[in-house]
Picture 1 (cartoon, rainbow, N blue to C red):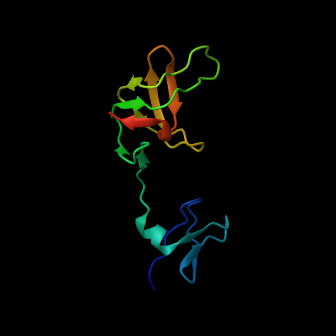
Picture 2: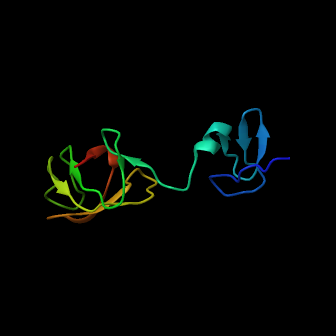
Amino acid sequence: MSQLPNCPKCGSEYTYEDGNLYICPECANEWSQDAAVESSDTLVVKDANGTILQDGDDVTVIKDLKVKGSTSGIKVGTKIKGIRLVEGNDGHNIDCKVTGVGAIKLKQEFVKKS
C-alpha cells in the first residue's frame, strides 16, 4: 500500500482517499491528488504581473496606498529595496521598509518587480 500524504492544513497522518480527493478526518480538509503532487513547502509569491518574487528583490508600488495611522500614504512609483517574503493569512506576504513610513507589510497585488 502506498503512503498517503499528511494533511497540509493540520499535519494529520490519518488521511484517506475518496475518489480523486484526499480527506482529513481530524479537520475535514479536502484536497485533490493533483494539488498534493504540486504542493511544496516553499512560499510562492507573484507580483501584479505574475512574476515570481524572491527574498531580497526590489519592487515598485503600482497604486497609491493608504497607511492606517499615518497622514501620508505610499505613492505610486515608490521603489522598495530588499523585500522579505512571509506567510500572511490576510494576503500581506511582503515584509519591507518604506522610506518615510517605516516597516510595513504589503499585498503582492500592489507591487511589480523592478
